[in-house]
Amino acid sequence: MVEMRNLDPETPMFAQFAQETGPVVLTNTFVVPPERGEVFLTLFRRQAEYMKARPGFVSLQMHKGTAGSRLFMNVAVWESSAALAAALRSPEFQRLAADFPSDVVSYPHVFERIDIERVDNERADIERIDT
Image (cartoon, rainbow, N blue to C red; front, side, top):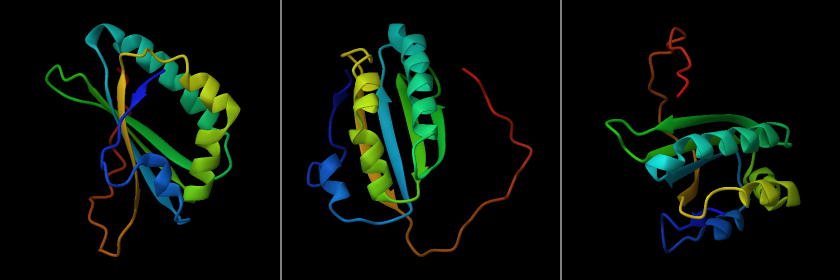
């Protein structure tokens, strides 16, 4: 199972669910040993398929650090913190999480959108990149 560490020591991961809010964004940065990259992605894809079917799931994207970085970052959007918490606490998610190598370290944190103007180029021509 992945070793989970708090990105913000003052706000542990599951304490973030005490305040019900929505929608939320979960970012989860993983430090993955180079020899575990393919295994990690295979297991993550399996876990992502499960999460897609959970109530309140909106979207998910995985990113990989550049220049030989060992970092991967998952960015997932959920309708509410309650929906995300329910999915993470489910027995099936826990079973899938137990399959990950123990030398992978995870830094999850939940965010909510703040009231600033959206800034983007609305580019529809960006294609999915498979690693």
